[in-house]
Image (spheres, rainbow, N blue to C red):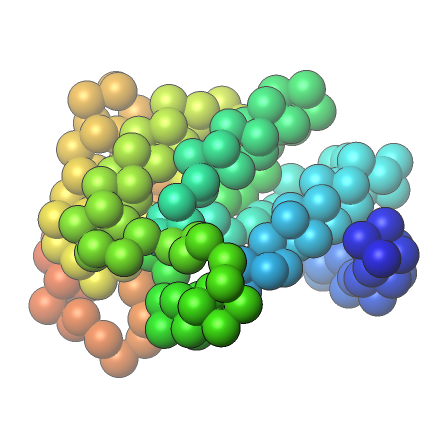
Amino acid sequence: DFEGSVAAVKDRLRPIFRKGIETGAALTLDLEQFRFRDLTLEVFTSLLDEEEFRGYDDAGAVLQAYLRDADQDLDRLVDWARERGRPFHLRLVKGAYWDYETVVAAQEGWPVPVFTHKPDTDAMYEKLARVMLQASDVVRPAFASHNVRSLAVAVETARDLGLAPNAFELQMLHGMGDPIKAAVRALGLRLR
C-alpha cells in the first residue's frame, strides 16, 4: 500500500516539520534501506509540495551513491526542485548497508541494487557531486565522506564551477578523520 504508507508517514512527520520550522531547525530524511528509497523520496517531495511546507528551505534528504540508479534519483530531485522553484538540502553519502542489500537481493532472487565493486561507488559519488554542484541554485549540497579523494573531487569541482566556498559543506562523523577535518578547516571550508 504505497500511497497509504506515504500518507501515514507524512501524518507522523508533519508535527516534526512544524516544530522544525518553528525552531529554525534543519531536518533531513535519511535513506536507509533500498526497499524504502521510493517511499522516502515520495514522502519528502510530496510533503514539501504541501502549502504549509513550501517555504521550509531547511529540509533535506540523503542520496546513496552505491545505488546503481542514484543518478536517476538525483535527476528526479533536481527536476522537482526546479519545478518547485525552491532549494533543498541534499546530503550525498556512499551507503552503509552494502551487506544487507546484497544478502536480501540474493535471498529474494532480485537484482543487486548496489554496486558490487567499490570503485564503481566512488565513480558514482564523483558524478553525483558534480551534478549537485552544477544544480547549486536548487540543491544545497553536502558531501559526507572520510575518503580524501571523494572530498577533494567535490571541493575542486566546486572551484572549477566558480562556486563560493560556502556553496556546499563537507560532513564527517564525530571522532573520525580528525586530521582530514583539520585540513578542511585550514582551507576555510564548511564542515559539519
